[in-house]
Image 1: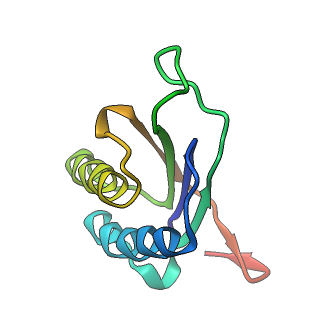
Image 2: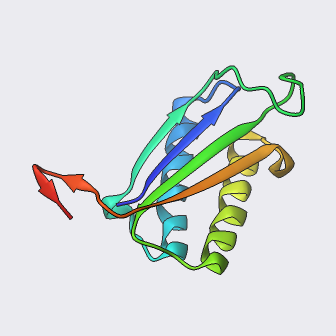
Image 3: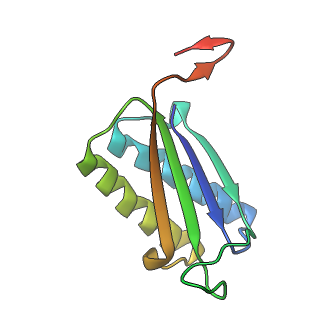
Length: 113
């Protein structure tokens, strides 16, 4: 049950959005999760400023998951997320922040996991 939110200051076509979603679905296996429980939100045209500027593609990604993963698996996922956004959205990895949050309590379908 990971949730990945991608915010970017560029326009994302429906085709690119689907490509990013599918590739993130494969990438979450690096932290021991599966696409079958993955929720993805992609928000384009955000008013993001990075290093005092907003004139080049940038992205902020939040990954929230039930439980924990190892620091090395987070590192691998960060690399994969940067590769995905670079390939699909032309965002330079040096213009991407990735934040991780480990959630202890996660509700679903009227109950708790």
